[in-house]
Amino acid sequence: MPASRTVEVLPTSADLFHAAAEEFVRAGNAAIARHDRFTVALSGGSTPKTLYSLLAKEHARFTWRKTFLFFGDERHVPPDHPESNYRMVNESLLTKISMPPKNVHRVPAENRDAHAAAAEYEENLHKFFELRTGEFPVFDLILLGLGTDGHTASLFPNSQALKEQSRLVVANWVEKFNAYRITFTYPVLNHASEVLFLASGADKVQVVSVVLEGENNPPYPAQRVRPTDGKLLWMLDQAAADRLIS
Ligand code: 6PG
Image (cartoon, rainbow, N blue to C red):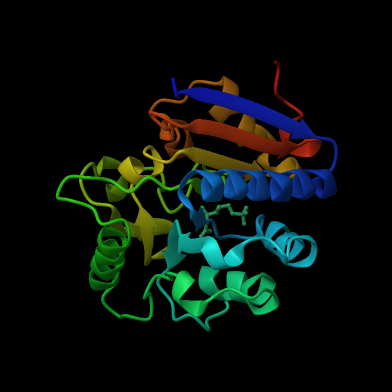
């Protein structure tokens, strides 16, 4: 079991994203008070876009200059591609706040060689966190989403990256997309000080109930995110939480 797991259910998706924005800012201020910087890995997909827009709109005065943004995963596409998580974050957040460009660490996914892109991003983590061999970065906050197949970041069921225990970032072949994704591995996710899962909407109700209260054999990838010495927080709207018992 992780150090602590909390599940917060908000009545509506609007309430969910407001609460998530408050949690982002709370975690950020606590990290900056603790060690004068806030390291956060963002999630992609459609769910967090509203959160990023809200952060830009309601928290433009947050201490972005002491915030360092990374990406928990990325599609193997250039940064201007419609599928790019970086593009989504750039349009919904970065272009609307004043953050030093050097604070944004995007995945170099334009590199046609996905393995080389993953290795370069891993090197970036090593340098930024000044890691010695065998050490893992400790992010202050990692945002994660949840796919209806139980995947998170780009750790998909039955994919190679699920087995990775020493690399920080890998290129993961995803059969159903016939493409690579570049993703953080479990050791990075499970060394975080806080992991915040966001799930919204009725289409997530089944997978949420299995991930939080059910058994799946093998476990869904999201069920293996258990920060060893950190906080695990699930924020859901009622529509996604409707089948939860407790
Ligand atoms: C990505 C994400 C992925 C996402 C889930 C949920 O790059 O797609 O990082 O893990 O969080 O697929 O996606 P939705 O929010 O679109 O349902």
